Image 1 (cartoon, rainbow, N blue to C red):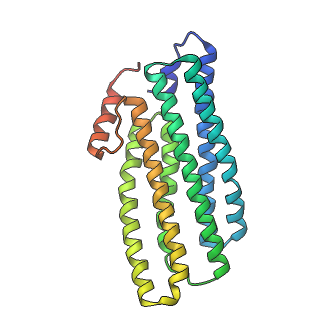
Image 2 (cartoon, rainbow, N blue to C red; image 1 turned 90 degrees about the horizontal axis):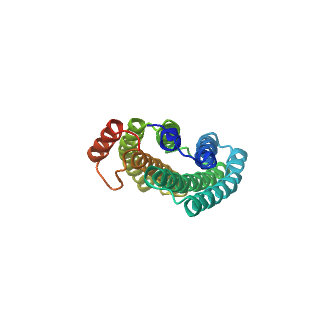
Image 3 (cartoon, one colour; image 1 turned 45 degrees about the horizontal axis):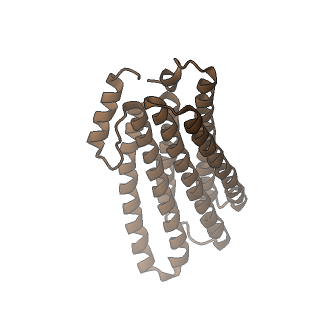
Length: 245
């Protein structure tokens, strides 16, 4: 089921256009945030303080887009009093927008630590883990945006499933860095910066997973927050088998 299936039969063409506009703005914001995450990780790995600062400044743009989309969603609800699938669409977009804004915040935090590490010039201990987990979460963000663009709940499910792998990699990396700090107290300062970067990456994965859950709710009508992957998979299959409302 595509977004257009939900509202293609509306009598009001203007209502169709309003729904399409907030969907497009969500994906536009998603593209900006995806670039933020990419640049933040690359800035850290390459010791590029200028790129980190440039990425940080993008955060204001994502904040403004969140406010704009939220205001439009509220206006549509007040004016149109949407029912069923239309209301789910607006709700899913509003919640996904909030998650994107928080992903942008985490990317900004990574940039701050990247600047500190670039100025410190200490050992790159933990950078391999940052590269690996960074790649995983960047793929999650990219895939969940693709899932929203295509109403692809199967892809959304795979994003949620990937979050489990990110959590495991994060725990392994944390144990390694804590052990390293215990063995060499001189590395505590730089290692703490890397730990906070890994924490931000893990949270980015969480927010991408949240967005996947919002999409499954949109398509299937089943709220899968706090549910198991098995329950989410069942909702995905149900949504695929159900006719559009």
